[in-house]
Image (cartoon, rainbow, N blue to C red; front, side, top):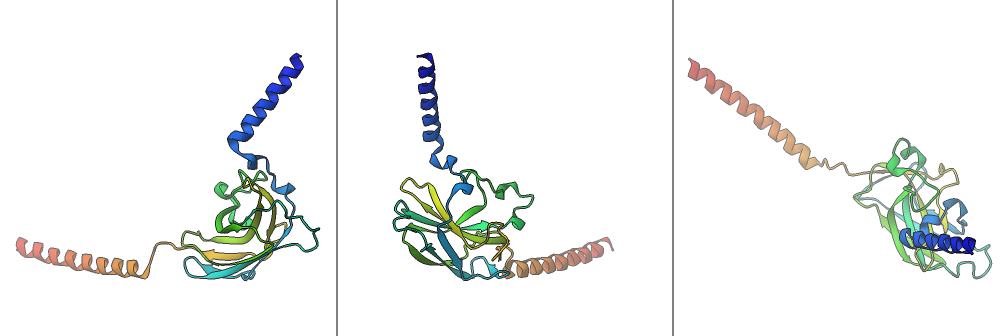
Length: 201
């Protein structure tokens, strides 16, 4: 009986942990089936500019799968994901097999009800930082848990990588203002220097 009570206690604790942290803590990327075919109009080596450029992403269920393979797919979520070259020495972008802890894909391109095929035109958001990227799509079930995926790159995440140049905050207006201010400061300094010299004389 003691063993039975311990077993029930363990089960209760496990249920409590799952309820607290959510089901996706147990989802491993390595165990997700790659059932979605994802493509984008970006090409390897393309350079896009945040806040300006656009690209189109499409997704489709692999037609070699049996009918009903996507029966529990309720939502599709498409994301911009860091390529390995932009993750090096950056812990805040680190890949983790536990999707709850994974920081590879941080920027949502689109999230919508699942359809077996879909397309979305995306304007690169202004807050996207300078880095190299690929696109990944997750199929989510009714609880919002990832159950399948597809991506525009290969397993090593080296193919079809494109770059985005982020907005630095330095605009032409700011540079012009800085130049004008610097020029004004120089003139003012010279003026006060002349005035001080005249007073001494």
